Length: 210
Image (cartoon, rainbow, N blue to C red; front, side, top):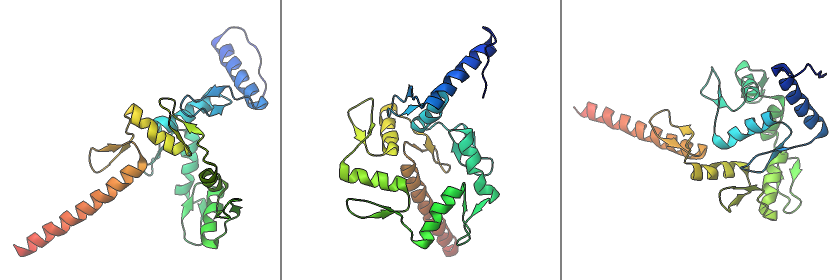
C-alpha cells in the first residue's frame, strides 16, 4: 500500500490517518486502549468494533435470520452458514468458516488435542484450554473500570458492566422484556415457551369439556 501527500485537503487528512493506522499495524504498536477491559488495538477502527462487544451494539443484521453483529465482516462470515459453504458431512450442520467446521468435527471424532498441564483435562480448542487454565492460576485479566471486580472471561465482564450502565440489549421477541445477558434471555424464552404450551393444552382441554 502506497501513501502520498496531497496537501491539507480532507483527502490528505484521511490519508494521514490511514498512514498512521498502517504504520501502527505494521509495527505491531497498539496505542488504542479499551477503557472497559484494557485490551489494546493497532487502529481506532478495531477499537470501535471491539467496544460494541461491551455495549451490545449490533449494527449489522442478517436478512435471513434474527442475528445481528457488531461488524460487517462478522456478518459476512456468518452468512456462510446460510449459503451452505461449510457443511458437516456427519450431521448436516452448517458453519461460518472452515475453522469452525474443523472444531465441530472433533465433537464427532472425540478428538481433544489441547491438554491442561495441571490436571490433564483435554479440550477441543486452544481458547477453551486458556479459559480453563485460569481456574488453576486464579488469573482474572478482565477488570471493571467502574468498580474493583475482575473476571476470568471477557463475556463475564461484559455482563457485569451492564449492571453499572443498566443496559439490556437482549430483547425477547415474544414479549417486551429485555435482559443484560444472553443466558438470561435464553432462560426466559424457555420459560415463556413452556408457559405458552401449558396454556394451549389447558385451553384445548377446556374446549373439549365444553
